[in-house]
Image (cartoon, rainbow, N blue to C red):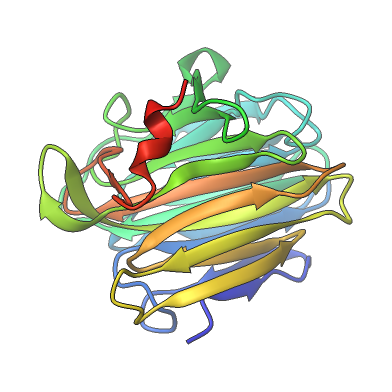
Length: 265
């Protein structure tokens, strides 16, 4: 199975990873792109959905509520604390573009209906994870401190030539509090845009053993297995990471063959 997918930019809402049509059972991903003045009606149905503002500004209208000019950057490399908004299941809304917008749409089926939430820049937590040469700056946008019940979402910035998520790690076994079962997607962008990264995905039994060259507007699905990423020299790598599973959190285990790296300071 090919776990890599590509997005071809176009107007409206494009579903890229869709439950029942991809390797994932709990997680969906798509992109909304509109030009200034254009509108899009959206309904969450049985999913909770987080909308991460990648580019531009929009108004969000639902019921008698209107959030104005949501968004705080023209590219993901301009501001590492993305504005976003969260919508519970069974919610109708309208998105009005103030200028050109690009929005990541992240969803997962849920039973419980919560409340809509606007998440401004000051909600986002930034952390530096790892050591050189496997260091990245990671933001936490949607987690247990939001109204979301299942989704966990953030962004990662990897400097040229660095690895991210090393040692390779996974979250496909119920071994709490160390590890939880959660699917994940990485969606990639680059600066400059012609860059690429290498995304590894493998299982210890060899059932999955893949290394993808991922380019602008491509993603990789992780239904299970260890994964790690390397950014090529000369290009800054960005990836949006989104998770959904039996536990809402960042609980994972490292590949024991490479965990010794963590002891080398």
